[in-house]
Image 1 (tube, rainbow, N blue to C red):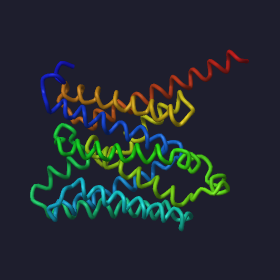
Image 2 (spheres, helix red, strand yellow):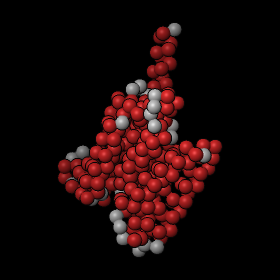
Image 3 (spheres, helix red, strand yellow):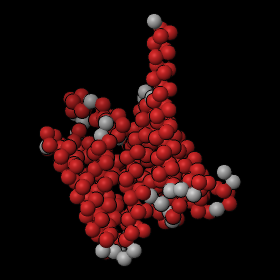
Image 4 (tube, rainbow, N blue to C red):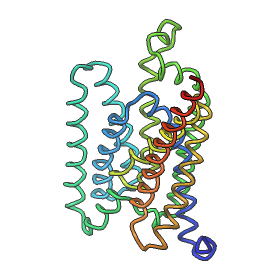
Length: 275
């Protein structure tokens, strides 16, 4: 762990991982509870179209990612509201189209091969100070919106019909919720890339769900787990000289498997003791 104190690029990567873990824990908890990982996947893979277009026209990839993520979130939310019977197919089509458009734009941009790999699989070790500030702003925005509309998001996540009966504008908050997921996806792209975003978005929250049963505690524990996974993953990838994003996901995935086994064993033990 001494390397964190010796190299500034590792300190920057660590800070990026910690920032990403906050949004990951907050919005990932909603994604897991509402079971919309496939919708978050559609949003994340559509982001490549925006990043590719931004690179091609000379703009910031983060700006392109942000615009594409928000547009994808609104389109996917509208598909869910209007065409529920065909939503899987339509979201799958958006997923593929977004990736294809991004690859085409990047292929027409000089030096595309390096950029494409870093966007698909992440390159947290190359995060700049400007990107850290962008991540911090997105984190503040996501956290503020969740705090402001905590009860509405909770109602929409657990029981949409009850929320409608209470006068909550469900469709509006559902679309707003997906937009916040989109912002979180843009945060995580810097850490693990587009391909592995869903894993880091859902695994810490899924592990937290094994041990806590209130949304607030789930968000807190998921954020702490995300910080642990990213910190250990960055250190381990540095020691092994291997891709950081993939190592972070392996750490998170391995922890999820062990947690699932342990929680099942503990549940059976408690049931046996009660009987």
